[in-house]
Image 1 (cartoon, rainbow, N blue to C red):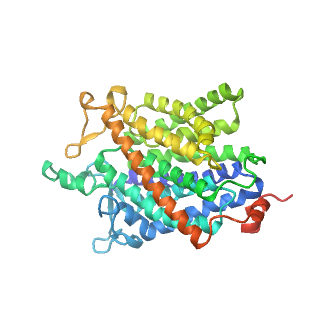
Image 2 (cartoon, helix red, strand yellow; image 1 turned 90 degrees about the vertical axis):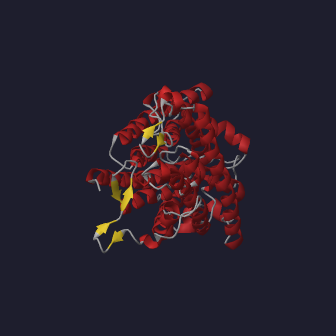
Image 3 (cartoon, rainbow, N blue to C red; image 1 turned 180 degrees about the vertical axis):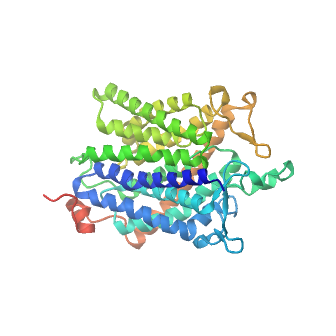
Length: 443
């Protein structure tokens, strides 16, 4: 097992934790009213912690062990088997290079952070009105039946060393996740993280209903300063999220790193320009939102496109996210409090589709592996943008439908068991006091 790769993956795992707590928590916290600041911080932090525990108990096993095309098995319940007592060694996990491994416990820890932040993202869609207990119960159900299987479908495969010859290719492919078998490209989680969470959030916004006074009372963010700090921490942490998904400290990690850098910068400019043209002024909230939009859009493409492609994806995502939180939001009519679908849904779908375009070596992309026996890449004259975009679109559709159905059932179950929403009196007073018995700011 390579020490450099192992060290990079542990650093990447720390960076994704930084993205969530404090990054996402502060980004979301600044966007709500001051009376609900702590409730959002709690929902993000406790959700993240809950999912990390569930990941170690059964989530990792469901997502990343051999089972069928949709679910893994139970070989790693409570993380059993990651240490070989007889040999006295840690179990290795495959990377994307033949003969290169990292400890499985490091891979499991890295992926735990993905599961945690995905569930925490959903919180923003129904902020300021959901019961704390309802949020946690929903997360348990949704994580089990939406996150884990979609992660398995998109990312589980047998690893490069399993492809020892042409005679085993079909058998190895058949053991992989359903969406992996289709040939969909998702470097760091466009489908698994962003679209998956965004659909769950949108369904929740519909199911829980609009905030009291929505559209009539001011619900302006209470601290754009904290939102900017949160967005900046997200940008920093996202380098671990995207570049870490290479699983090695190599050229693809470097490509994902610079693409995450330039796409996000382009998205900040795109959103700011769009806002200036649309409203006459570019706002701090817009710039921070543009950064997140760019980070979301480049996620599936990070190690799959060239730098030119990343710039284009970033710039387009700035405009697309702006439309998502303004035009599309009005069309949908849901009170998606912190625009989870407008940013993560719209830009996640955009990034997933454009990955199929800019992965093309004819447009500066690195192409994709066409033969895992030789690790041969698809040649420029054999790459079909239309075919790859169609595969990407099918992956998006499967994720939307799967997450939508699971979310609907999960919210219904939670509503029947404990109820989804706090009372109107509690909502008006604020969830910080009524749910947690404390206030963010002493007056």
